Length: 190
Image (cartoon, rainbow, N blue to C red):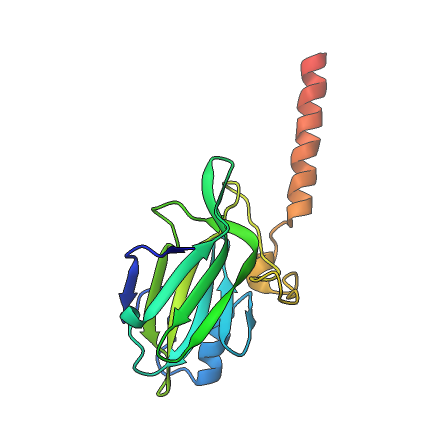
């Protein structure tokens, strides 16, 4: 497992999973598990391009006490990828690790793209590790689990994952494109 690059930082309010000002603990936990799940030591969320692993650590935790490492590196489609991640906060002996359900990008530029330690509430900070999904450009892939050992979460019912009302689903778009292709092929044969 290789250590994470110097992409770590402490504090700040940037990033999509930053707790909203004035929001209660439940609201902040929900935000950290949007389109993902909550577990005892960690939460995970996702959007179309990234998954964010959020590990709760004690208040006072510092970035220099955190180690983020990757395992199971391989090249897929010309892209350096990794299969596993490990987040460790040494003073509290908090460790979250495992093989992910899917590969994520592990190029130098996006190798555990960003990780940071941020304030969460009066008794906790959160280590946020952003993992870039390794997907074909212009496609959406929603992970049903972060770690392979987790139970699957239901994604289809989530508005964020299924799109806004009125948008066509993937199957409908695929069928329409396939129909257009068949028509074009028939016209070119004539």
